Image 1 (cartoon, rainbow, N blue to C red):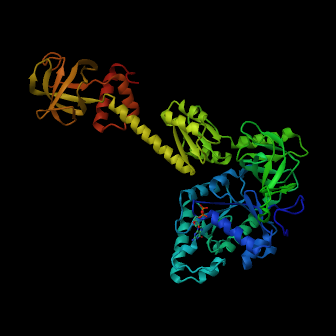
Image 2: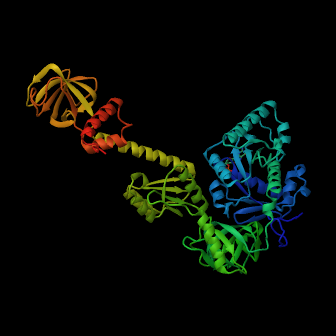
Image 3: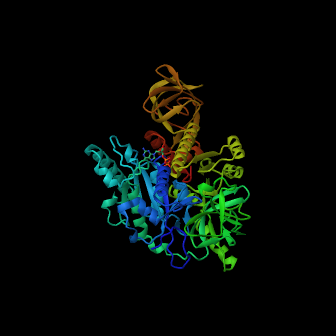
Length: 602
Ligand code: GDP
């Protein structure tokens, strides 16, 4: 058994610390839970037992077993502890990508017991499913149930026993709702103490990040999950050349551009040559300093950081090196050491290629905060059948607006921005253009908003088209209802289908041969002038052009003339939008025209 966290003698058979991510909907308690774990660790552990990393906290096994008390027998475990990623939130989780999958080995999905499943819960669940990451659900805020009687830091079953029947019932009801939601999303789940096989079933752990109840259980379950199902993957060569993922690219006073990384394999040393995934090409550079947060007690010294010579996986560390300006969040970082640098460059290139998003000639512009989230966006858009013309990591910049504005289709003059800023000059250009930007930190909200926008645009387009298009109508001249012979002819008619409107041309078919006989110049219904008349109504029409008894006769069936182009649009794009009787009239009209010319309106 190893008794330290991520430190220890390098060796080929050392087990590395499993990496844990905390996910969930905003305000469900991710930060509080991490704080509680950290806080408990500080109280329970001896000074310095937990180590604060850059972007992560390592909790060694002995501290976990102290917190967990009777729940954990440390001799059951030989993994060194758990490394919690500190930046909670699913977008940072998607950043955490190792070759071929999520970087986090296991995850905690935090769900507020009262609030249940929310959009980001579902999104996190989708990510866990896609990356096949084992996880448990922390049903948080049990202390907020009315009548809850807190037992600080107690194992949850112990605490539950002290609750009144009513509170227990209430809690069970909320918990089974969560189990039901999980099942709706394809996960069979149960209270963690009922779960035998954590690979097949998701364990639900009731907790309170406020009172610490259930935290011992949560740590125990996480440790068990890692030990049982992750051990093989933890057998890495921690003495070998380091492999990691860039969490963040940051300007740091005195160091220039630095990268915060999570090292998930091997070691990195202060004199290593490294290759980092860059915006254009892999960056080959030499480590200038490896930086860790200075322990709180020494915070008064000048730098927030202290330099270390070597770090071993798993760990969060800041790497200072020249030429990191083009490094990307989510990109791979690899130590070269004793290998040809080209070989490592190739590895980094191929890793980047795996994450590369397929783009089309025409589509929307996508910007995201990290490579991982860009990939998640691309997946969601592909599922929604939305093409992408350009996909990049970084803030929305003026050139993104340029690309979006040159799209052929209005629906593609769009930028979907996931968790990134819009630069001021880009914002100005957007205001001056017809480009639309959607911003959100929930992927599926972005997709949904965009879909709604597309629907709205299509509706508007159809409406304007329909307004400007001549629509089919057919009417019959009634017998003995000629009020005036010509200039214009005024005749009583019945509208058989469609809607007649003023200024439309009127045609008569002799067999299949259409002849334009005149133009509608007035419609009267019950003695009143009207603009249009619908099928079924009897109206008198003034038709400029023909003379009754010569070009037109009482009893004739006449048609509104449809220009060929309009007929084509009606048939091909708007058929579903027009009423039945109009559709029927259109079909008859097309049939007559096509008897004469089979390609008419095609
Ligand atoms: P995050 O957005 O998921 O990181 O959520 P936070 O950790 O910031 O928590 C959101 C709010 O819920 C804060 O006001 C917390 O104090 C509160 N909160 C979190 N966990 C608990 C809990 O277990 N019990 C109670 N009563 N409040 C909690």
